[in-house]
Length: 316
Image 1 (cartoon, one colour):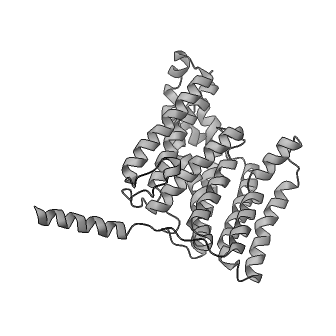
Image 2 (tube, one colour):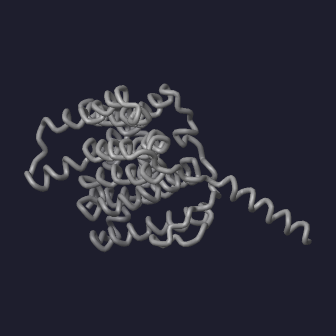
Image 3 (cartoon, one colour):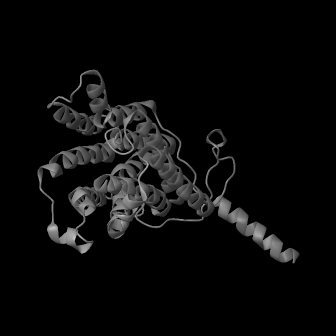
């Protein structure tokens, strides 16, 4: 028996030794340049213009594209900033694609018919098709720069990897991501569902009207979770982690993701704060497991809840 216990201890120590270790932040120049690009090229300027002026100027989009474009030029001229070239390219692509695709009518009636052609399909199909196209272009473009699929977290990852404790945020122990992901995935979705229910107070009749939409809700939630992970998270982590370290990459991806929800669901300042925490958690999952599964799973469960209440608004 003692031999078996000793073998188990050795295996445990070996697994701990192979656990992911965060990369430290490098020189300050790269960190400041990446943060400036994240904030100026993200949704923050649009939020500030909306709050203080009341509208977003037409020239803001072009000005924002100029920010990562300037970073790309700077990476050519400055050795200190050179590690950020893939990040600059990522942000340029993201801004251009997000601005161009809405100009194209991606409404495809046969796709809507596949899941029942409900009002929810009409609300979601074009939007989710656009997001998927952005995600696919981002993936292909970054693979062409020399990154590998595992660099972009395009795999399940180590779903039993230990979570790095963060006592200040209530994660004091190195639990397995299998346990942590299940508890927090259902916990976040449950809390979100309760909050939405108390805010909307839908009737039993309205819930009954959702039944034909259930396949669409599940399908689009799964698709949205994948697309947003491959738009807002994986490319940023893959391009920023080697350049500015794991912690900086994690927080920048969380801020970009959270700010993007100001005009979405949940929205407003509270929605931004909740989404930043959510983005931090999903990025943490992606980094520590070196894969997509837990980030996608937690995101998917929350999207199911959000999409249920979007569908309720359509049938109310």
